[in-house]
Length: 112
Image (cartoon, rainbow, N blue to C red; front, top):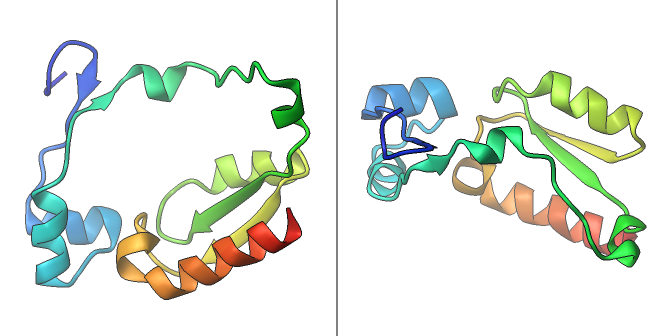
C-alpha cells in the first residue's frame, strides 16, 4: 500500500482525476491534487460503532453520485430505510456541483 503502513493513496494525475472522480475543470483538478492525502485502509473495513443510543434513532440519508460506483451501497442504504438522493455527477459533488449539494443537505436537515 502506498502512503504508509495501513493507508492507501491513489496515484493521481489530472486525467485520472477527471476519469475517476468526474472533476474536469483544470483549476478544480489542481486544487484536489494538492489536497489528496493517504486514506486509512481501516476506514473501508471497520464497521461504524455508535455508542450514543440517541444517535441510532436519527434519520439517515445517502447521497449517490451517478458516476461514483456506489450503487450497491446506496441500495443497501435504501433497503435499510435511509433517504436516498441522486446527483448526476462524479464522486465529489462538493467540487463539481456545490450548490446542488447544499440544497440536498438543507433538505435533509429540514426533514431531520
